[in-house]
Amino acid sequence: MGLRHRALPQGEVRPPETHGRLAVGALAGLAIFGLLFSVGHARGAWPGPPLGGFAGTDLVAGIVFAVVLLLVLLRGRA
Image (cartoon, rainbow, N blue to C red; front, side):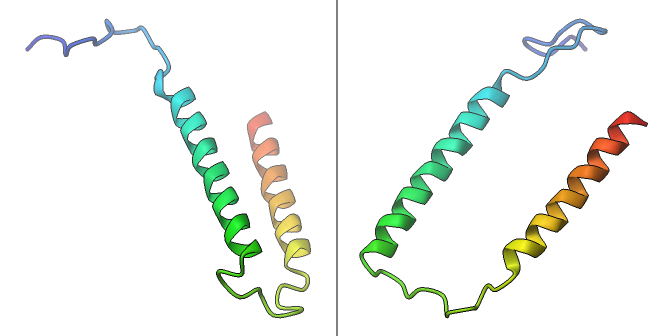
């Protein structure tokens, strides 16, 4: 069996070229979603959340994110 088309010889490692395109595409998709969501909310396309429905959610999400980030950073040093 021969090497696949465009395969690198054994021992050479090259990062995929698609990571940059994937990141840009994901960012563009998120921007389009945010724009459409904002326009829909401004036009009253869907009802808003109940008052106090998300009370304290941002605090809990921030603490969880901070703990996970701390664990990832500490694990990287070990």
